[in-house]
Image 1 (cartoon, helix red, strand yellow):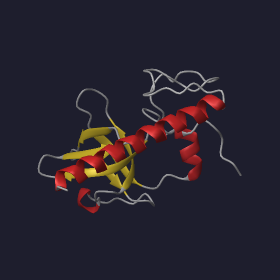
Image 2: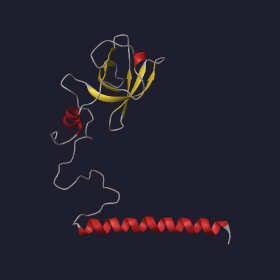
Image 3: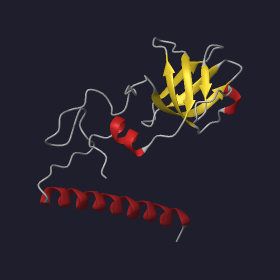
Image 4: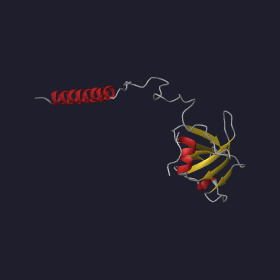
Length: 156
């Protein structure tokens, strides 16, 4: 037998397996009284919950006006920092000579001390081209996670 026959047979078997898995998941959902939706309808939300006004965690600021980000990249030549929210939304902010950089303990640092992957709390000016006012290195605590991104209180 030729090679093409085996490649086509493998592809056919893989597609049949995916189809059967999808049907079995739909049957389980139906048995549990849930209506399966493939793909989820636009604006769909779980039964008994209110639709969200926006994606969770976007635009939520701390009491001091800071938002949590992950540093995606730094372009010192263009004075820009690409920040990524935990929801994968990115924000490009300009940095100026007035931008403050702080470490975890609140001591002054330089832009060159920040690296891609660092977690930061940032305050920026609004508008179409936001400028960073303050960037503070720091982790998100479990309490912060619940406060800004989850709809239920911290379990103690």
